[in-house]
Structure formats: C-alpha cells, structure tokens
Length: 583
Ligand SMILES: [Zn+2]
Image (tube, rainbow, N blue to C red):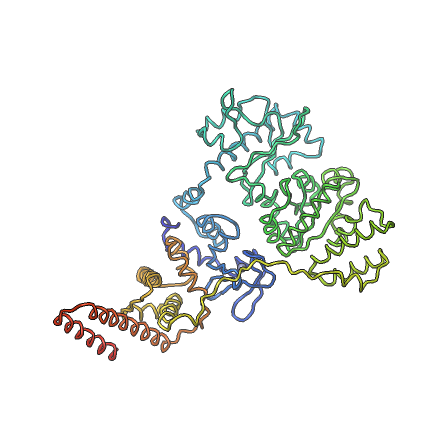
C-alpha cells in the first residue's frame, strides 16, 4: 500500500531510474525490435520470454504473465515490500527521502520488531567476544585462522555461561516476552525466561537481504552432544528459503560469473579467509526448489562443492536433480580424503583449492564415478547395474553433446556397442507445469466487449483518448472496466499527465483493480493510437448501450397490462431509436 506516499513523490522516484538499466542489473537483456528481451526470473524460463519496454517503462512476461513497472520488478525479484522497493529505487536514482518516508519503510515490515531483536542480539554477542570474557573464544578462532577482520566481517559473537544475560539485555531494551520467545533466542522454562545459547561462539545467519534472522552457536571449550545449535525456524527464518552468505557474496558472484555452493557456513567463511568470496552455503538440509531458483538467478554457472565424504556425494547428486528441475546444469568440485572445504583449505591452502575450482568436472563425469563407487564392474552383474544406472541418468540430460561424450565413455568402459547403448535411452519428456495463462478467447467476446476493453487499453496509453472518453461521456457496461476507466480518468484529472508505469504504482492502493489492469496489459494492440478506431469503439459501445436500454423497455412492456403505461414506454423506445440513429 502506498496510501501514505504522495503520488508525485512516487512518480519522481520512478522517473529517476530507467527500467532497462535496473532490470539489466539483475538479468541480461538483448534488444529485439523496439523492446528488450531476457530470461524471465519469475518462472522456469528457457528462452527469453520477458520483454522490457523502454518507451512504456514496463516489463511483461509472455509466458507466466508477470508484469509491472520498475517497483514491481524489484519487489518481486528481491522478495521485499512495495515500500522497500520504492526506497531501493530512490537510492538508485539519487532521490532524497524524508523521515516520514523512512519510517514507512520500517513499518512496512510487519516483522520489524523481530528483526530488531536479532539486530540487538547480534551486537550484544559481538561485543562480548571483544571483551576480556571473550579471550578464550577469540584465541580458539584465531588458532583456526579466523582473525579479527573475519570476525568483524561475519559479525561473529559469543554467548557466555550466564543463563540470562541476553534475556535481561533485551528486556531492558523493551522487547516483549512474546517477541523474546518468538525469536527462538529465549526459552520460558521452570526457571523463568532464559537464554537458549550459553557458552557458544555465535555465527549470525542472514536472510537474502543481509538481515540477521537467526544464529548458529558452536561449542569451543567443552564437549557437548550438539556441536552446533541453530535457531529454530520462525516466521522470518526458514531454512529452505535461506542461502548463507547470499547478500555478502552477490557482487563477487556477479563479477566472477559463477557461484560456489557449499554445505556448511564454516566452509564459506574458510574460503573467504583465503580470498574466495563467491561462495554460499545451504543450511544443512537438501536444496529446495525455492533455493534452486534463487541460485539460478545468482549466476550463469553454479559449482557444487560439497563435503568430500559419501554423504556429500549423495547431497551433490540430489542437488543436481533439483537444479535440473529449474533448467540448470551445474558443475561439480569433489574433494579427496573425505574432507569438507573448510578442512581441505586448512590442510592444503589456497593454491590447491583454487586449482580445484578452476577445474570443475561436468555432471555426467561426476555421476559416472559416483555410480561406479564401490562396484566391481569386472563382474557382469555389477557392470549391468552400473550401465543401467548411467543410462537412466542420461535420460535426464538435455545436452546432446554431453550425452554423446558420456555414451562414448560408457561404451569404452563397458565394451558395449554405442548404438546399442543409445537405443536404451528413453527420451522421457518431463511433465512441464502448464504455466501459459489462459488467454481470453478473442472470438468469444462480443464486439462491444472487445471495444470496451480496447478503449481502456488506449486510455492507459494516451491522454488524448482519456479526453475523448470524458468529452463524449462514455459509459462502459462492464463494471470492472468502468471502474478502471474512471480511475484512469481521475488520475489524469488530478495529475494532468498519465504514464502507464506511474499509473501502475498508483493502483497499488486499489488491489481490486489488479486483475482487470493485468488483463488490459496482456492485450497486444498496436501502440499507435488511431482516432478513427477509437471512434469506432465508442460508437459500438454506445450502440450496445442503446440496445440494452431498448431491450429492457421492451421486456417491461411485455410484463404490464396498463395500455397508457405501454404507450409511454413505446414512445421512450422510439426516442431511443432516434437517438441511436443520430449518434
Ligand atoms: Zn515469466
């Protein structure tokens, strides 16, 4: 909702940036005709379905129907509120914002109280690590080559033995009991309210916008059954949606052109210590479709560098499958001796790890060696099983060249004829989700329905048409279209100008108009306004209106018996017919 920001300010902010520049900073766009095209980030797009119009300053996906102005794009791409997207645009365009606006940005987030709790806790834990009480923990970290600079960068902190330090601190800050418990940092037990974390090194977990939403606490000076304790999931901390180090690495990933995906956050921090900063980590569990889509948006190339053990290989395997579902074929980095990236870098140093990164293996080579592991393929039975498994995996591959290369390798390995192997691959088409939006069948629409719809389309694109609409007192029979047309007219009346992109931020306050506006934007009409055509629309619309009125009166006549009354209605009908003829 933008009820509290003036439309003038919104327009100023929107006009301070060019949608083409903004969208290009997220996805690459190629000019085609008078628009630009790119891979749509809002559905599993394989060919560029999203068009961006420099003239109209809007974008539109022909496949999934995503559309809007620059605010909407940022809002949906970054998963933030409308106000936050506007703020981002203002920053990009160098538009000054007043305090009122800034407080709106804060209030737009219904979880802001919870974010504040984490932000305060973060500072609290971080400060403790820098005090005398944090000496032992600091030494422990330093010994593991985590120096002060890294501690600062990753905002690492410390919780102490005391059971209620954080609870007291937050209570004093005015945090309610409800929010304390909601945060997952405090527990209400037999002893009253108590800290969850004690005597642990605190690693903050950040969301995609870089805001702290939880912690992972690690033991360092004692034995405990759980080496790490992660904050429980909350409304703002969902493991399946989180990617560790996303915000911090975004820029570097863009520069390098690829992102390295690891299993644990310690791996990411370790890589950072040796200057490899384009790494992210999944929060433990298997990669979700949501995360796969975010990774896909991050970079063209994705390298999977999971733990070197059996579990890591298994995780790599399932991650490849999840990524395949969103149309991404990653590359794989495997580490020897069952080492995870953290241990590997500590043991072998930067050079050897860099060499690994520079030579990732392709998905099929990884799968071949994985499927072969612990198998004695000199035995016919095991060889058959191996070949069958590889064939099964090959059926999932879309890349013909990769398929051919792998088949050749498999043929040599197994001694089986390559044509024979090829025949075994079944071209299974994955059932693709039907995303094409149901396009209203043009033929089914009556002439006047089409005229009303098209007239509104042109009102959105030309103030001349709005003037005609008003001067000729057009009345639309479709109530939804009528409502939209009147809103367009009101907007123009108030601001003296209209641009589609600005109007779109205006109707953020009128969600009931969304669907109708979206339908109108889906029309592919010529951009040139032809006044003759507009006139035809209006004649058709008015004609229909007369017909409807006449029909209504005729129905009434049939129902009444009073002759006088019938005469009266009949003369009204005659009047309407004359008016219609002379329109
Ligand atoms: Zn799309």
